[in-house]
Amino acid sequence: MEVHAHTHTERKKWTHYLWEFLMLFLAVTLGFLVENMREHFVEHQREKQFIQSLFNDIKADTANITRIIMARTIKDRSLDSLSYMMNSADPGTFIKQIYFYAAPIARTLPYRLVPNDGTMQQLKNSGGLRLIRNRAVVDSIAKYDVAVRNLFGQWGVEESLINSYRDAATKIFDALVFEQMQDEDAGIVNLPNDQATLQPYSKPELYEWNYRLYGIRSLNKANRRDLRSLLQQATNLLNTLRQAYHLK
Image (cartoon, rainbow, N blue to C red; front, side, top):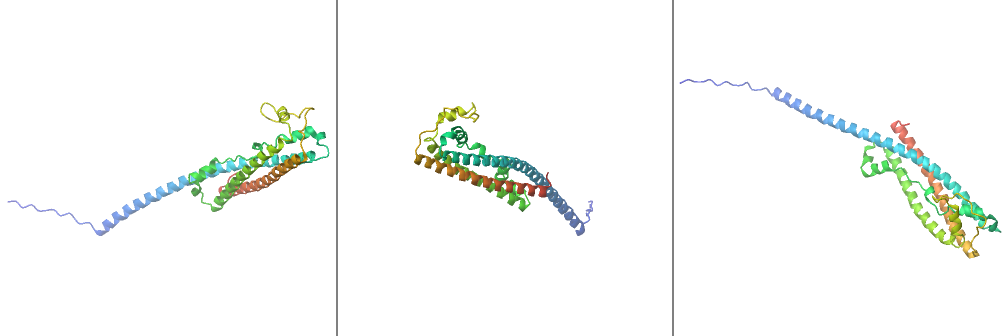
């Protein structure tokens, strides 16, 4: 009967197991660090893209705000002239000018800002603001957004005032004259003809019209003031973005 000798494998030293553990730990740790770095890189790239897009939007807003401030300044002068002529000793001597200044009063779109807020909405709705690490930038963006939304509230009040003005204006102006002054796109391009007249209004009706016009004038001034403030906030935001992200 043959007896087979059993071969014995040499037991590994504890240092061998320690080395295997360290290698495995190092591999897992490096993998985690690489993935973490990749995520940070991707988020940083997204942050830069958001900021560049927002920067372009705010630059476009500043141009529109500047234009609207000028339009409201012209409107303020027109309303002032209209009030003066309507309350003069003989408004009939200013018929053409009165209709010319009165025609665009009820129009609001040329005097309102339509913000380029596509990027702003993305930042707010998709959690993009968390990508922006600079708190000064986040605060400046938030202040600008609040200022824009506050203007929307004023425009609702302005629309209400204009609707009440229309009621008072029907007792003084002839709508057919306004129609003759318009082109096919409803633009005011012509002065009224020599046959244009005002309605035979009473003093109480003039006083009512004055009161409605006063409300429009006051809110127009308030809107212009707030637009100037918004323009300053937009300029501050652009400067903050330039400094923080080295934009031009």
